[in-house]
Length: 210
Image (tube, rainbow, N blue to C red; front, side):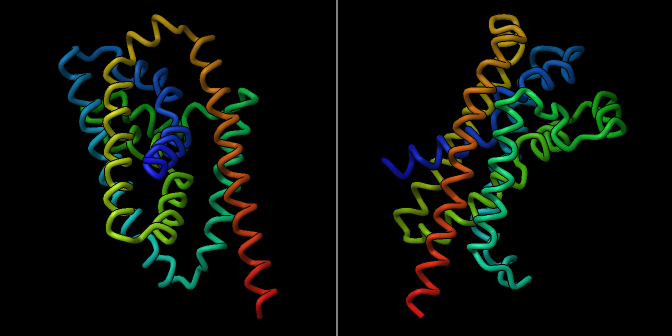
């Protein structure tokens, strides 16, 4: 249960679906309620697929390119901490890697569930690197099942959040969303720093033992 809660909390904080609410509202403003539900569902499904692929096959990609798991953890920690700092200070890029051309194209298309919502706005480098490192540490059958359930729970939470995005935007308002994003930002910074510290300790211990 502790592993489930930790991974769920870490992924939810890094993905930050609450911060995606304003963008989702803007992109689906002219859509019907059923269309918003469909987009919410497919966004969650796409995020789940991306995270599962990252979890199971990400380490093989690292091996192919000769990247150590500790290097990935440090790089991922920096990315996660940087994102958290941006959330905390209110300087977070609301487009999250989406340029103006992509944004305009997304507004003209009916299906925005994969791009830009699922990737890069939700499933980005931070969550992908987090899962790759997590698989390296938790690769027993029971741990893998728990991790899959945690990823599924995050996908369900994303669906519920996006499905309720228009209601949340009305209830919370811009200031409420900013406040929540800053709280989440503090948690994300802590996660990123923890990854960096753990990696440095592992590197030092490994070299010391040699």
